[in-house]
Length: 449
Ligand code: NDP
Image (cartoon, rainbow, N blue to C red; front, side, top):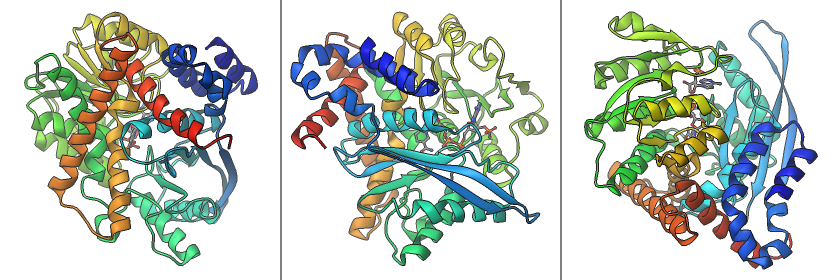
């Protein structure tokens, strides 16, 4: 394990998040590599950490003042052993190669867990949609697709949304792809319903994460009813996590954005949640405005440089980090444990630092890593691809049932693999090992490519 982690660190010294993802993964799968010398001989670990292809490109576009802006575009095609590359696009100023490689690496094993035939990829840009007009976002998306279109396709690489890429951006990206290729195919997922999207895709990641938490609690004969829940973020994943938690009788007391968080002791009910949806999705406002509408709540700014995030320092039963990577550090994890939290279910990708993960595992928290807990999004993307190929649309119930079955199956797969490899109840090991075995066995079947 140390060899590979060291190798990655020396080879790509600036890719901090990628090192972190590889380290966490290798901690789980090293015993499997030890027990299977054929994996070592086939240089499986060395092949897994090297993307099959990395595409980096210039994205020049013109803003509303007529000035030329230049951003950087990326697509990481990480692994296609079990299907075409599949994974989201992120538009955020923090985007760089290291962040996208970590996301693509995680995506490979997440997709393997879904039971659907999808390889792993990820992409995006350091473009910031915040504060841009619709026309600027459209011009940027068109410029981005003017290069990306030659690398993707319904049977090759099928991007979707992620941070900063929602229905609006997917629409503009799809429009440009269609114009350039002169074909209408399922090349992107997360499309609007009237032109090839799937019912339940917007809800899928958040609902799936809550279904996973319900499964974990169910394994201990408990339910979510009456549980006090901390949720971070207020974007796609956070909104639908909160919605499903409310449906199941839990009490959601926090939501956040990158500026701060709101704490509403009485609980965020359906009416308050629809205010947040309008605020974030239509008006594109800030979470601080919740306090103006509901003065009994408390708004606290978050300082990214501070020792801990106060959002994670409230008495609660469950935590659903659903904003971004590394939003729970060691101190936050300790605070969650001290405040009585028993379930941590990751809607976001890698929201917990490695030190934080160790705290959860050492305190027997029911801890679901993102690659298992947030796999509902890509699963319904996979179902969107199936519907596009069949040229039909399933009902809401049909998609929701399939999502529930997939989340149940991922939960069982994780528990079985954890048990089989001597760490019962450890969902991190279970997810990493089960995803690893599926991908690696396919790679071995396909030879040295
Ligand atoms: P959105 O863009 O819809 O929302 C992101 C939310 O997180 C916003 O509230 C945003 O606040 C906040 N946020 C973003 N960056 C930071 C930061 N650096 N610090 C604090 N808060 C931040 O994205 P999604 O909801 O789609 O994605 C959230 C997470 O879930 C990501 O980790 C993503 O990779 C993961 N995920 C998403 C899936 C999906 O289907 N969408 C599928 C699987 C995982 P602000 O508005 O201030 O930026």
